[in-house]
Image (cartoon, rainbow, N blue to C red; front, side, top):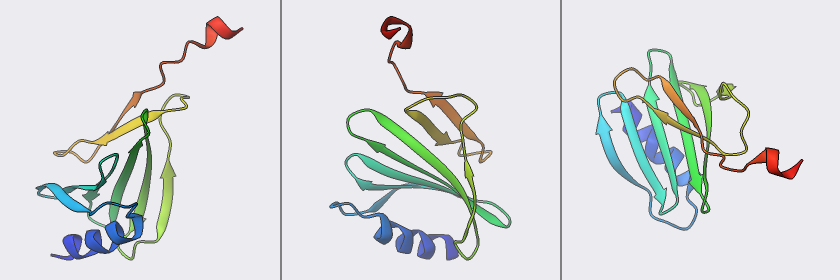
Length: 111
């Protein structure tokens, strides 16, 4: 499968001291654990790949991008809100990104 071969290549690029391994594969969706604190989600669409990388140190934060089938960056996606720690996951059935504000800092108390 083209997706698995490409995921293996991408996992090698993002290795941060761990052993990347696929922890979930369901249809067009893949979740790869790169380290204990870093994961990569990929959803294969008709012409593109949707990629979400999440790192936890200890607060989790994600970045999301869209790549073409040659793994060239098309677009960096941003959450619909402002947050220091935006957390994203890919809906396994629809391929939609679900964003959560993972920033628990109370900015009002610092003013």
